[in-house]
Length: 91
Image 1 (tube, rainbow, N blue to C red):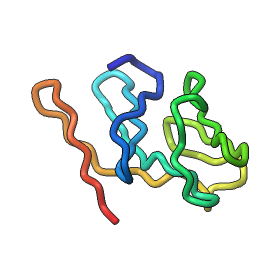
Image 2 (image 1 turned 180 degrees about the horizontal axis):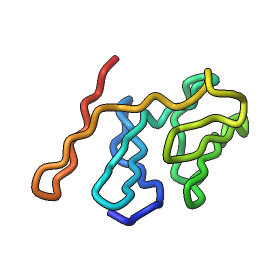
Image 3 (image 1 turned 135 degrees about the horizontal axis):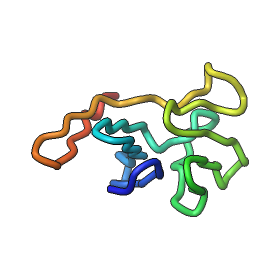
Image 4 (image 1 turned 45 degrees about the horizontal axis):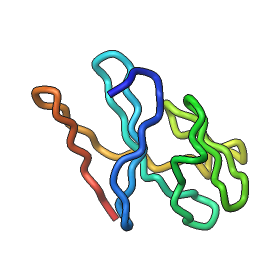
């Protein structure tokens, strides 16, 4: 997994954005907090993600939103074991 670059994985209602910095890996639900649209790979540029539906912008790490922290992306629990990354998806 590349370092300090957003990677999108999954889909069909369970898409995630993954970020690695050194040994630390973080993951976020890949859905815009504005109207729930899936954040598409076409909207990813470095550590910035733009929702192609309405232009809302997010940045990693942290999942912050240009429209304020109440709209930040939801972080998920991550486990790394032997180079394998597992993400715990919760409602």
